[in-house]
Image 1 (cartoon, helix red, strand yellow):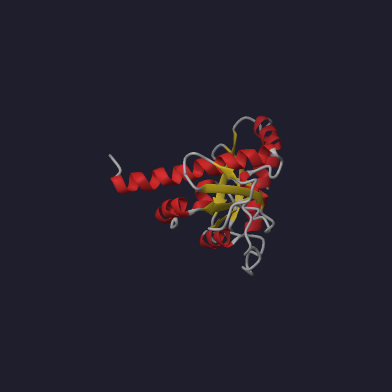
Image 2 (cartoon, one colour):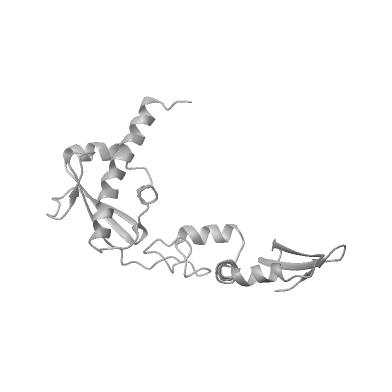
Length: 193
């Protein structure tokens, strides 16, 4: 299996841009501008040479590839504190904290959070996913807390069950929730949550 020359060049260009962005993110972390890349807004300053390379990758989802909340592109002059790299000639990158609200599901900042009436706390992408799964986000958060915060309690529950009992954790699709059931050998399980 081998990529075509065109696809290989496409991915090489993406990785070159990503290398310069990662360098800028590391410098921003060291300067305590932002703690995580998901909190960052990256601005790419392109001259004519970098613009030609950017044109080959402009259709890519750069936010996802760079693992940042927002990518802006400017053909203007770069500020003096912009980071440049050797991978892409004519590219300069600045990093700042994204001030948009943060989605609690994907942890990315997005300007359109709150526009979906059914899921006002989620970004449009996450709201669409939760709708497609026919779940209430609040119930999913409850299950996440159950697994994350109360894991030690569940472990104790597993350890101190009488012999012959089993615990079952499974999704209840009809009620859009998770169930934790206890059953004795050969008996019908019942919900203990």
